[in-house]
Every structure is written in C-alpha cells, then in structure tokens.
Length: 176
Length: 428
Image (cartoon, rainbow over all chains, first blue to last red):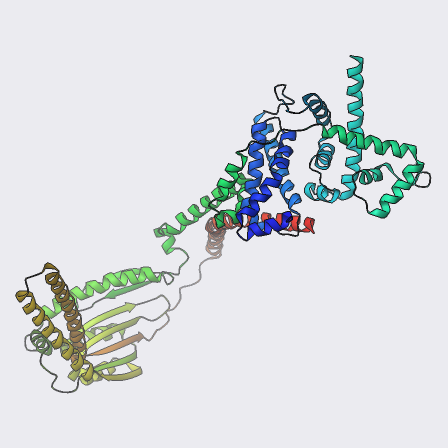
C-alpha cells in the first residue's frame, strides 16, 4: 500500500486516481473531525469538502518533508477556527442542540460530548486530536504549533479533568 | 513527590498509554507499574477513559461528498492552484490592500495626467525676455515672449507658432519680389517637373559668422540692407537682451549662391569677426538620382493609368490598380518635395550670422538706504519661508501617493514572507 505522501506526490505529478485514493482514506476521518466539533452536520460536511479542495488547490505547495496527515489536519483546524470566528461574529454559536442525533449510542455520545464541552478549549483540542484523529504527540505539536512538552502536559490535564467530569456526571445520574 | 520517591511522573504515563515511548522507556515504565499501584490505576483509568471516549461515534458522510471536491479539481487550473493558499487567507485583508493600492494609483494617475497650470509652468525658473521677429522690414512687428529655460517644450511650441508666422511673411515677401531674379528661374524649373538635368555641379553652400559689435542697432539694420541688396531673404532672426549683459542677435540669411562672397564681405564690416567658417556639399549625384527615380515613377503612373482605362473586367483588379496608382502618386509627391528642397538649397546659400553687442556696464545708482535694505530682507525672508512651506507641501503631494501605493503593495508581501518564514522555521 502506498503511503499518503507517495500518493500526494503522484497527484502533484498529475495522477487524479492518487488523490481519489487519498480522499477515500480520509473522507470519514475529516468529516468526523468537523462533526465532533460542530453542531451542524451539513456544515461539517461542507467544511470537510473545503478542506479537500484547499488540499487540491494548494497541492503544489505540499512538500514531502511534512506528513500528509499533519498537513491535512492543520488545514482542517484553520477551517474550523475560521468557522468559529464566523459563528461568533454572526452570534449563532449554539451549544448542544437537542435535535442533534447520533446514529450510534446517542446516550453515551452526548454524555462524552457534554463533558468535553466543559473542558478548557486548549486541553480539549489536544485530547480530541489524540483520541479521535489518532495523531502522535509530534503531529499534535506540529498541527497546533506548540512544543511537545506542552502537548504532554495538556493531554495529562485534559484526561484528568475529563475523568473527574465523567465521574461527577455518573454520580449525579446515580443519585437521580 | 520528588523523583527519588517516585521515579515516574504522572505526565510520563500518558506517552506510555498512547504508545509514544521507545521500547526501553516503555519497559522501564512497565517495571515501575508492577511495583506502583497508584500508577497502575492511573494507566488503567486512562485506558478506560479512551474506551469511553471511543463510544462517541459519528455517522459517515454522505456519498455525494466527493462530487464537489472532484468537481473543483476538474479544471486543475494551475494559476488558481498556485494562488490557492493566497485566496484562502483572510481575503478581506488583501481586498483592503488592493483597494488602497487602486486608490493610490488613481491619485497618482490623476496628478500625472493633469496638465500643468500657468503658475506651475512659470514657477521656479529664471525669467529672461526675448524678442523674436522675422524682421523682414523696418516696420515689422516684434513679438515679445517670456522664456523659461526649464520649459523647453513650451518654448519650442512658441517658436513653432513664430516659425509659422515667419513662413507666412516669407510668402508675402516672395510675392513682392521683382521679376527676373534667381528665384524666378527656380520656379520655372519647378514648372518643368524636374525633367531638365542640371547644367553644372550642384553645390549647397553654407557659412557661419560670429561678430562682436559696439553698434548693435545699426548692425541689425545693416543686415537687413545686405539681404535686400543681394536679393535674398531673411529666413529667421532672433534678438535677445538680458539685464547686465550685452544684446545678442542670431539670423539665418538665404542669399543667392553667386552672391554669397559679396554678402560675407559686407557682413564682416559689421564689427570684429570672432569666428568664421564656410562649407559646401556637392549634391549633384543625389539630385540626378532623385530626378531619374521621379521620371521612372511618372512612367509607372502613366502605365497604370493606361491599364486602368483598358482593364474593366473584374472589380478586384480595378481596385488593386487604383491602389497602386495612389501609392505611386504618393511616392512621386515625396520625391518631388525632396528634389525641390535640394534644388532650393543649391540656389540659395545659407549664412548663419551671430552678432553680440560689446557690453558696457552702466554706472550703478547709489545703494538704497539701510531701512529699505532691512525691509527688502524681511520681504525676501517671508517669501523664502512661504516658498519652503509650499515646496514641502508639493513634495508630499507629489511623492505621497506613490509612497502609499508602494507601502500598500509591499506590506502584504512582507507580511506573507514573514508568515512563510515563520511557518518554515516552525516546520524545521
């Protein structure tokens, strides 16, 4: 199996099937990235599309010194930050809409999501990149442009806080 | 808790759980975990937390998600791909920069395209007065003009209008010429369409004279008399006088070639000859060649006219013959003008005479009173200060828009380079 970087280089050389393969590999992960961070499924899909479009248009800028996953998630993060700024400007930042449904295990999903929402944004981002996008510490450091020790400490604190939040929610549930 | 009491810090457990340690470091942690229940619990909790987080699943994206992506890839426009990074970063900033640049460009364009006003045309130049005239007779009108040395184009324009006036006056002069002079033979020669070959060598003669005189006014009158006596004409004359300097006259005389020597003799009597030079140029072959080409062109024209009369079959042929006739006629007219010019130059010698007045300084009146001098100094100072303020304002207005433009263009570029460098350093 060809690596992501090889496929990207082939696309730079004009191979469209190479990009199609990359798209198939990452369409769900990139969509998941936005879906877990935004309330709107349609908007999440649009942003995932835009991320791939930016990769397509900027493919000449890509250099194999950077890992493709790092490159891709860095673009996705920028799209996300732009979207959040736009939401703040337009005052349409809505937390946890009740109508938002998840196909699998909605109860657990909302429980985890609710706890994550309460974390400090910096901690939450590191934790989500690690748990859901499965990025290594080096990759997270590169994507967020922070030192690797910062990634370690944030991750540790995020996990500690999330554990405490889940435990407190669990205790409330039992008491009710 | 110190490192001695507890060799593994809590933060170091995270890379172990996440599989981010090398084999040696991982085995060290494992050894520690066998002994430390607290850390073992922490690792187990972290793993359980990961499992809990993994329960949050999201649905798959729709099947048509790729349609838009591959639709955008279809044209694969190189230019848009190259600048994709540009268009995706805070496009509003580039919009503002572009608009500023456009405004600055328009302002600079307007300032450059606006014609200079009269005030601008005469400012910052040293003024001198001059009078230029054809001077074809004692009663000729004088035309005074203010010439600014730095406004060459303007001066030339004024000279151009004067030149036209002189040409008109020369025409009138020619109409008043007595019959039988040499110019009549020239006109006769012209009437014969240049078919007559020249009797002898055709030579264009020129002479230059520079004279210093004490009696400037009489010298000017004498020049006119010499021209009339030789039955020539005054092509151009300029008289200039500046305060503190002697007057100066420059004239171009056209005298019949056979009267050049007598004319020069008379001119030398005007004063002290500072410089004299004579020259000649044989144009016989040029004239003969022109005449031959002219005859050929006329023959061609006749043949074409005959062809035009005979061939009336196709419209395209008729049109092409007409076009050819027109081209040949144009050529004939151009050669005719050249031939006349050469002939004229051989018939009339050109003398350029410059007369300078020997200047005698006038006795200066007594110096003004101290109060007047102080007042004058004060006024000069006021004008100087006002001038410097105006100069500064003009400098800002002249170069300000251009500076703004370049700042608007270069600042985003510098900003982008800085960002690129930063990202490169971060990547390394």
